[in-house]
Length: 242
Ligand code: UDP
Ligand code: MG
Figure 1 (cartoon, rainbow, N blue to C red):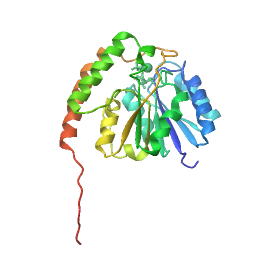
Figure 2 (cartoon, rainbow, N blue to C red):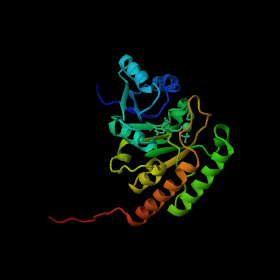
Figure 3 (tube, protein in one colour):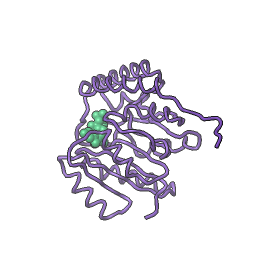
Figure 4 (cartoon, helix red, strand yellow):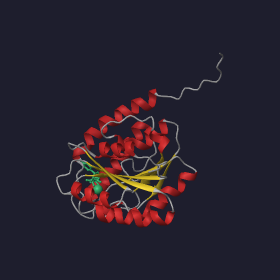
């Protein structure tokens, strides 16, 4: 199979109640765009029947590809493994629980004619899909993140993004990196824009990340990214002889 134009990357941990509907909606959205595509699902060692379901779906449609971790590695790792196996010129990442709306995909693709990376922002809609504590903690986390890393990203942890594949060629994987994608991509010299997206309540299954199981780790990562951002700079050789 030739490399498709678009790769859609889905991280999946116990999402058997969501994956079939998500993939159906994605296919209904992408088909009118007349883009060749693949959908890559990374099963992060689910305990439900996600993998059996994926085996069945991949057998029926070769545009659906699946891979499975031998142990649970977390969202960043599942996203990264999907990105690594993506073959498209454009890569889209999103959650698999239908909190991100697959029908909004064209909205994320549109700015790619002017920008290298488009990041979804749930700031305007978040109160519809999440409870008060999660909305408030996300606001605070984004404020601290922006303050310490000299950024202006309104919703750094949103995984709904579309980007040109070269944006991620030189990135290094670390656990939790999905929260810093916009900053890391900018550090590579690429242009990044945010677009407002909707947030829905989880369709099925239960949330894996609460407020407290991410805040301290994320803060530790933030200090590393802050350091990196201060110390890294693009080297431009202006003349070369011999
Ligand atoms: N996820 C994953 N591995 C994990 C936990 C979550 O791949 O160990 C996936 C999950 O299936 C979903 C996405 O990461 O597609 C976001 O997870 P979740 O909805 O639980 O996070 P929240 O929306 O609560 O922040
Ligand atoms: Mg979710």
